[in-house]
Image (cartoon, rainbow, N blue to C red; front, side):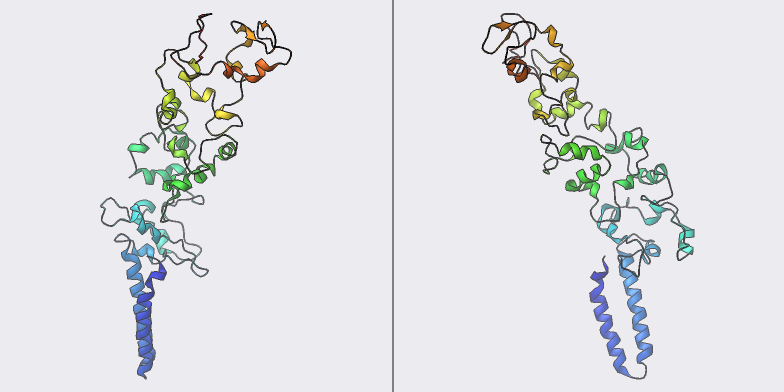
Length: 337
């Protein structure tokens, strides 16, 4: 409950205070009593929206956040799943931050931090702070957290998740890309290239393909492999085909960079240079038709050099596989239409 929501209580009690001022001889005493009641009501209203026993924390950590009160405001947690009073699983302040007796007893600048603090300024290491989260959050999407790249690099849960805010950026779809790219800056640069998946346009987010909490697939893929993740949307390339391109069967990322490229089709480089990463041009079977001249053998080109420059895919159009892939003249697999 925000401080501004207490204005009806304050208005009523302020009226009583004014009335007491008009009484006469006992006005000063009555005014003090009214002020004391205002403070008690405010504390009761603030504490009631959180779990029982949390009032000892919320009397300092309120919604007030101005120049005079520098305590971290925590009450927005009451509008999240972590503040649902009707759910027996809902934690209290102590559940995450520990008993923190030393923190409660001392005041001022010398006050020690809670037993378990979170955030970039916290003294505790990532494993300790993450353990507080993993006490409740386990299984399902988190079943592969242990051993994941984020866990191995000691990324704290609190780097992505914000508990004391109404809307956690890690679970707010439109905020996910900016959150991920605050660390993965090279991906932001790739998404700025001419050809990219529509993440900057808001039609996709990182978690459509990746599970940041870990997976059995490479690169935190949501599926067991890169290809299975790609086939979630690109089902027409799954097959089965009579003739399959081995590179396609192995890994889509051999040819494509899904985050962005300067080449059409998210290709890592244009043909023929991409194809020649695997296929040696000198071993190409058959004859190349030189533009405006006779057939030319052994991957050479005509005088104007247009054959090689126009690319392999002028002839080889079904690179992902097809069922009409045999050239009747040479008996070779050409992946032609």
